[in-house]
Image: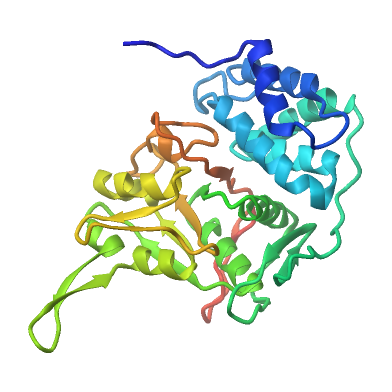
Length: 347
């Protein structure tokens, strides 16, 4: 048995950053990335949590860094190196935290990566010349889906919601699963639905509870008109095949077997295994997976997800799933709009 610790030695980190950003630009700011990462690791237990114990320290690891570097490498050709750095590090290290800690991380980014001067605000770049259709949100180009894009005028876009949507857009651009955590009726699922409709993707919502069965997700056998058994895809299987945007609602209410079935789909393998048919499904390129949950402890019956299922703020279970977690904090009174309008909370 061997214990393998996190490689937080500056020389090891330098090797990792160099490998990810090699050839991207003339000055990859390798030493700056290393200094930022070591500072945020050191600050996790002091500056980025509640010392009274109400808010636990975030768990940042090498995977958090490499997810940010992967985003930076992908985004640089479109948005430029500095904007890619700011967006990538913000998504990986600030978004998992409550809003009041965002400014602390952003100061670390600006100080270490840009010498104390924040880069200019991002602007929408030229449309990617790859032949695909795109829809813009803020400065991020998102691939258009098969449906006609539309804007739901009922949805109230406050400044804080715009910021959350921008964070989600970054994760969608990076093709990463997203976990949104926040209080009831904060608008977690509504934001995903708004963005799905804006980009022309089919929105699918799967509700979880303590009695959710794995067959609801994957599928089951039924008898056809002739009495023969045939397999019918579950809601998740159908979405994986067809490239829908899926929200797994109340994820931390789902039974353990359901969470275990998601591991393979959400990690780097990105595949769904159907044990009943012995089939391995590789997802449609347009598939995007989101999950929502209320904070565990504050709401009855909510379990603490394994670290592999929230690896962004990095709770991890030794597997490794890279969610971008956005804490939605209730700040003002709820606004109720009837006639099927969204119930929205200003955050």
